[in-house]
Image 1 (cartoon, helix red, strand yellow):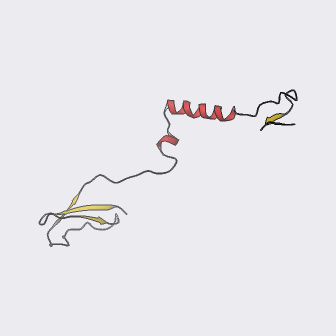
Image 2 (cartoon, one colour; image 1 turned 60 degrees about the horizontal axis):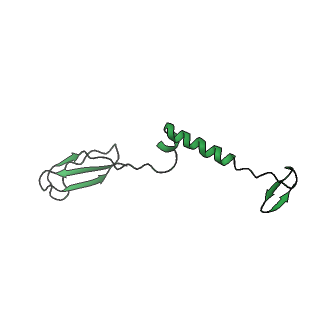
Image 3 (cartoon, one colour; image 1 turned 180 degrees about the vertical axis):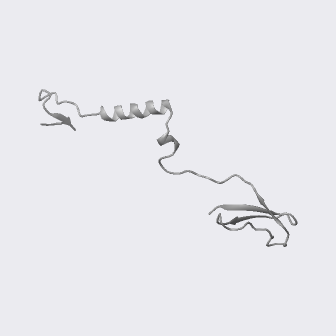
Amino acid sequence: MPIYEYACQSCHQTLEIRQKFSDTPLTICPACGGSLEKLLSAPALVFKGAGWYCNEFPSADRKKGLEAEKVAATSTSPAACPTKGGNGTCGGGSCKS
């Protein structure tokens, strides 16, 4: 539900009221009984989580960086074992075939 901001014409008090879209706007100030005016203000909007701008619509530079990260991740395969003529892999100082 959105939060609407109202200002009283008589006592100049401002209110923030949480209302449905279908609710009728307030017209009477709860503090003094004067008339209320609905104010326009910037919405408090925060996008959190994955799937927003950086992930879904990257710039050309960001795309190049993502591709470089993928290439670097796939090129870190284990080295061939020099003692077995390249038939095994070396891991932690011991050869495995």
